[in-house]
Amino acid sequence: MVIKKVKVKNEEGLHARPSSVLVKTASQFKSDFYIRMYGFKVNGKSILGVMTLAAECGSEMELLLEGPDEEEAADVIAKLFDNQFEMESS
Image 1 (tube, rainbow, N blue to C red):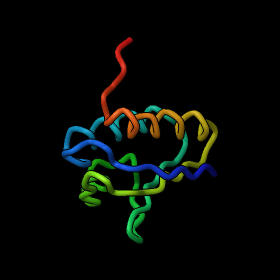
Image 2: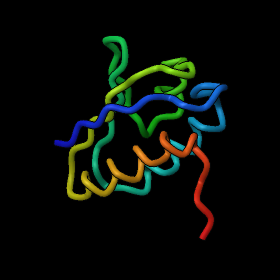
Image 3: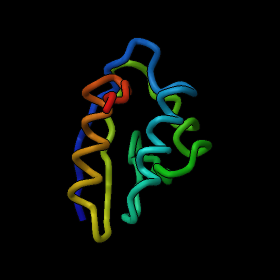
């Protein structure tokens, strides 16, 4: 299991668009993905789960990943937070 601490850096927080980017990215990996914040734990591959966190700018959370590609998934997802959920162009 990989656990990474991240912080929401974009001004608008984890609203619909960044939540969608997060879920879409996480769903590309086989590993299970959960987000833990303020005592809540939600499925990071569920748009409803992610949006129920109502994470504002500056919110800190833990990413929990477990599975065959957990390391790669953790790195890619943490990078999304660092890049304020802007997808890198190919």
